[in-house]
Length: 101
Image (cartoon, rainbow, N blue to C red; front, side, top):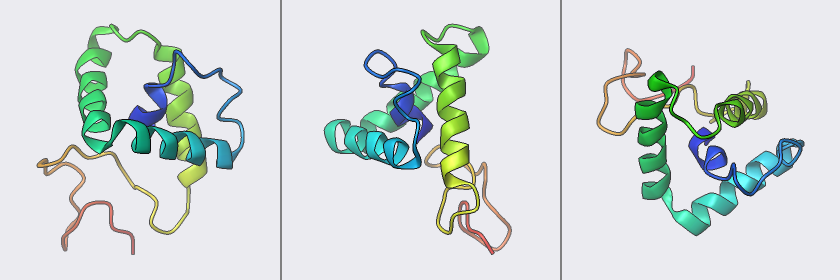
């Protein structure tokens, strides 16, 4: 979700993802337009570039993380953590990724 918003840093303004509906709408639009494989690829790029301070818009990334955290906080079915496909990171005892309860 964060990667989907981050990828729009050239088109969006910081005030654009203001309401919860705006955040969900922007993410949905990117998923439909670009597809999940492109978003996963961008997430991998962010992970690779961030430690080297090589991202084009680190402030925008921080805002995206903040807004996604605010929008998904405490909501049933909301992602608990970003997990790369095929990774064991984020796996909870008892199975599954990001399961609550």
